[in-house]
Length: 320
Length: 320
Image (tube, rainbow over all chains, first blue to last red; front, side, top):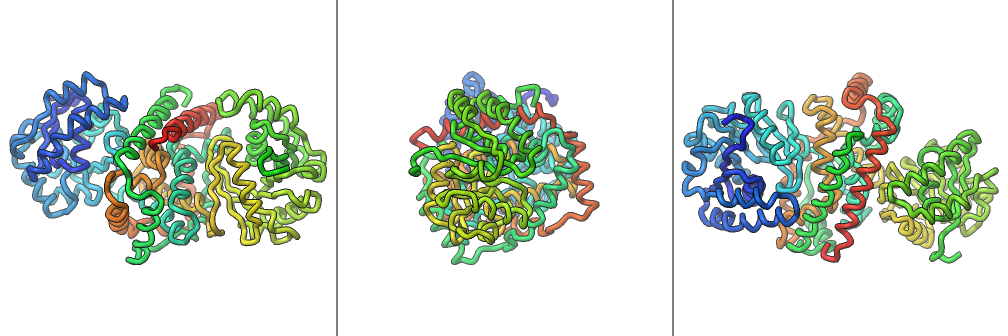
């Protein structure tokens, strides 16, 4: 194949993230094989795929004809060999434990094409670690999608020092075909990008709840109707600049940094919750929401669909 | 007046934030007086108001008839006395320097009705500090809007320990009339809520740029197409729960906390940038965007308008 064709895809891992990657690639009309070493998880994940793909179509996030074509060519891998043997892009999304993951990737490499690109949807391990047992570490890179994978465009791409630039460009191109927003890290960095930002926000939000400054619902409401919209409308640096139109970056950024210094000095610094704090947090979230229902999840998906249309409408305008 | 009427408003301060509050309240059809001790800033702010109110109407964020009524009754305060004398709600949004602000609030109190509620749009000082020179500190609370004030719903309301609960309820009600999402802090807390979260995100994003992990545009794109949408669609705690529908809060929150511990251990801890780092950051932002144009700002406003429609559409659905 050349880069400018649809890749043949093998998804390894039929849990939440693997099934989501399978849904996304099948819905795009691509040829996909799904495999999981755990045959009952594989059967369950495979059987759920048509419903998940139709769900994306119903949300208006997939084209019915492409989805139909993808479902027609969808295959259940009877073995790892059968699943990956002709794949151009192997998406590994099995569990996050390191040693089994490294062994699985080694097995994948043994039965895959030399030219295949291998991505690992790991949120915890860098490509250089994941590739430790590989003979061709240059074919591997790490991918961090956000959940729900089918709906959220940003996918972090984290090559290792050994990764072949062609693999990076292929993955970037394929993610683009899937309507994703690939964000390629220039180097491995502890916690990666989105992970760090999420961890930082999570800590401050937990602090607000545990210190009884805000209830869980108020934290969520403040974010949803406030900073969430700021970030969604243009990120953080761009939003700062746009608050002072006509001004140069210098006074605006410098003022923001100086203004933030006081804020940085009071931020939380703890790196762990005590068991008692963790219990209080869980209790506060339970009190706020009970457990989440599939209906509430579908409603969130519809809200995300509307938000995606909103940002795309904004970006289609050449003046943006 | 009773709480269930439109308040007569005096906005003190005709800079960016004061003008925005005036725009918002005038566009709602309310009776508003604008005042600034600096007469040229007052004239400039006052003259710009009709255009700003029309801008909100053009964006579909204000009703033309109400906006017309508000502009008809808009008054320029010839003096502080004249501006605040009959006001129910006095919105102070002058500069952020403490001593002049305290003196201004003292002057405001001397000429305002005893029953007036005084809010200070300060992002730096708590109500208890702001009220230091007041004889009726119970009438004052702090408000933190986000910029652009006219468009972003979340407004943090931070009462001091002395604040009269009636004032809090009045302000909450008035903000609701204005289509805002009031978030009332249960107590004063260093950095408040949104300020802490913004500072935490800003620090991680600056770190990513200074360590050359991502360019400024990539940070913004990752946020805009990723965590910004997550937060906008349901905050942080609710989004976590919705990723495991049907599960109880306990395993989900506990797992998220355990998963985050590794993340917290690598987050930035610095509280200041060196002059050289600040220069590099400014340069990186300049290289990415140059300076922001009024056209880009209008485009951002249109994007925010679409995002607001999107979250409101999602929330109107009873299943949400």
